[in-house]
Image 1: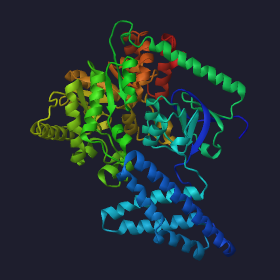
Image 2 (image 1 turned 90 degrees about the vertical axis):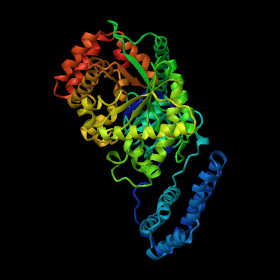
Image 3 (image 1 turned 60 degrees about the vertical axis):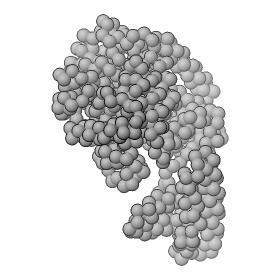
Image 4 (image 1 turned 90 degrees about the horizontal axis):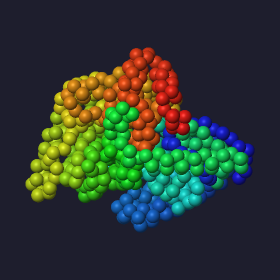
Length: 587
């Protein structure tokens, strides 16, 4: 398809330039409307429904075969349940009856029938049957997509220079597509710190989010350019624009090579103050990157991604041991900070806890969820403590809000160690225990927490979200997600002071640490351990090597006295422009 060039603006959340052809994927069903049909058209409408039902069954059969071949019979059983629902007369017969009796379109008949059945399932006093509601919802979404003429792309189609354009993607979908060789992503929703965005950065795939309505203006195979740093998306680029972007992409590759050449230089300020630049790890691919880009160990391994990759199955003890051992050995002689499961959200809470979460951000997530499911947590800790024999293991607890949670973890860890000892399995008794500072209550009581643990890790993504009362993935309030808000800077300074008072280590592992606009300020606030995406390490290191600590401390002091985030941003920008020669290229 040809068309005139269009430029759409979104939010650049994963850097880089991608050039290719679009494949659109719609994961959400748009609003279902009720349309009356003429009695003479009823048979045609029923036939349309039955054809959509036949095609949906074909798709599910195909999916079942694929899953059976690659993942085994047990997981393939999920799709067997879907087929049974599609062939159940209580479902399909009721849809046809509704079309004929109410003279309505097939989409509305499916929608209302599913609503009716969901209510019946929900009222049954049997947990297994109530959970079939999810199968019903999955089947109905697939059937409605077929009725709407929306095709479901197979991973085998994702070949060549493909850019996936979607209304939304789950983290697991992003992992699979990224590993399949997708060149870039454009999403209608999403935010800079969502798990989907973090995975795209981990795989070094450019991503632009917040481009509302783009799935409705594109056709598959339309030429498209994605600029992941500025958030610009170019549809149907002209030949001169294509040439320009190809040259810019080559320039980025050359720039990365230049920075990589400096990766083994020490991370010190110009006046010799050492700063540890560590790696945030989500996927196995990044372990080698951490070494290649000169990271001083692993400052954060988000262990929930081990679950996300295997979803809906849970990793076993040997799988935990195998991967944690790789992380710990690769980080040596530096520390490997492994965060226990930070699972949360409606889907993950349902799969792990078998409960529905009305408000997942404030509900069972992080340490709360794992302590509530000791059988899940026990498996992880057994693998974790066994892996500790192979390097310097630091265990990090997410979402800590009270000292009681630390006490409960220590008691549970003692139980797990006693079990390992009884089983005759070697394990590491001596490890460092840390807590995430990402809840305001933890930041405010950092002086109390510092007496009970060995280190802090500041998670700015959630700390900003909870402090500013803003959903970090909601595009409507994205402007309120302000890393440089005075409240955030004051909390950072307070946490650093509390850690220093008790002589414990403190690191920062949120997105601020790997951002050249913020890293110098963080050092000025007293942080000496910054953890970030491995690929960012050389650029941050090069920047810090041009700066002196006294001027960074003076910058931090000025910023702490400024009343507005916009004024802090202006202060930092002016400072970098006057001090850092690379600022125009990197910030």
